[in-house]
Length: 193
Image (cartoon, rainbow, N blue to C red; front, side, top):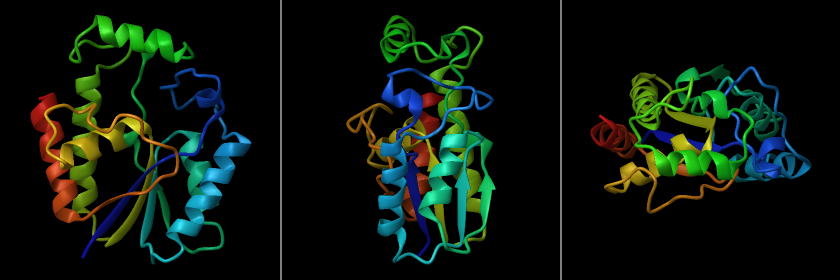
């Protein structure tokens, strides 16, 4: 059986101060708590013989992967399709400002100078399709809350990408077999398309 382990990165410096970051060029590290979460993830993953780890272009996902895989010979690659949502002009704003903007706009509307939630969702569906086409059998994916949330909800057959699971905790593994990840990608595409 193929296994895909989707994980949100450890707590970042901007998570700790409730600010958003959708630009991978902005350096944002992990907090001490985030590093501890990644170390705890290493213990959870110790019993899985991983073939590959994918992370996004954001430093917090790479650092989480480095800590979680310390001492193991697991190839690591970048998967930009799973990058966090480009929030454009909302970069660095508070979570409250970000959520207020979302409430006032439809999912198909792009953040000012950024991308829309639906465009990001379709990008994530493409990423999961690309992931399924890979030959490796056991893959760890360290990414962000929203692509994990969308996959969890879509695989469960929800009628919305943001629920019922909404708050995806840092460094908690979410397991998918091949059929589950395919179902997630197809459902994301249906809901966002």
